[in-house]
Image (cartoon, rainbow, N blue to C red; front, side, top):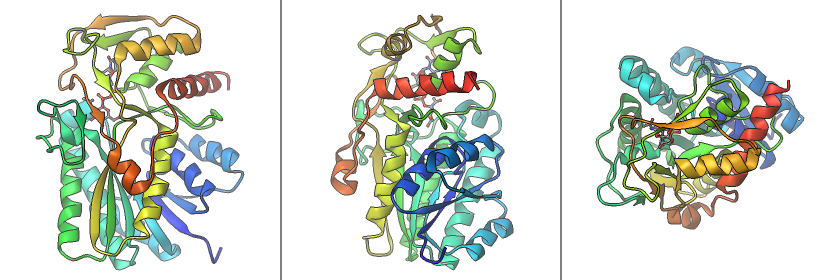
Length: 342
Ligand code: UD1
């Protein structure tokens, strides 16, 4: 299609990527997914096609393979890039650091190099609140809160990724790059056709909760009950994945209005903290069933309490989360039930 506004979405079959593909369609863009499906399923494409009622454009390509990746830039004339493709399991990154550095950094470097060669100026990069580590003396973090030494190779790839971007912009590159630091994305599309699809045992809280409730997992262990928080369990800023997806569209639209050679960073969260116990209680209400859980030891590296100051997202991108934690848990449970009944 000649007039299509093609957006390259690396890792577009992944959790946040797939929800962003829907948002892009709904906002007049034509997303082109590049994903090698090593950490995602083809069924995501089917779900996307049902939601968008259109043929999804996707190519099975590893973004670390420069030549293969270049082909997509030859095939399509992109107006923007959203770079998701990366590994994200903290524990695995500690055991296999080289795999994480190679994948997360080679993919980003190829993306930046090809963007320059093919003059695709607008790029949104997936970063994470993990870059704040354990912030000193504050629970609510702004984009100016200092970055702390990473406590895992995964976290380090996000920090180094941000530094690479800053260096590339400082070199005078004709690029505009928005770094979005996500807090804790949860939930699923309200159709229940796409959602979080962890391969193997999940690491994150919400899929652990829903898989325990459905009987795939036996019991949820709450990591620690003696944190200095209001109920002793860790507090996070859980944000609906569709709101996170929408932030990318707002981000791209904002980038397109900026002058070249700039980068900026924006927190993507709700600005509200929720504890693990509160998540369990909300889940039990929403699902109308009791969850099998018990307290266990603290998980190494967990920060007691962190949530986003979202002022900048509102002011700069005109973005804010429209859904609350209860909506997100409802959609996550709906997704789990729908998968089970298929
Ligand atoms: C984790 C990563 C973070 C990454 C994010 C991606 C760690 C230390 N941090 O964030 O770098 O960007 O995922 O989504 O892994 N919990 C339990 N029992 C469980 C699982 C989790 O009690 O079985 C608790 C955790 O202790 C934590 C909260 O639930 O307090 C959320 O955990 P999780 O979903 O893993 O997210 P983060 O640790 O915030």
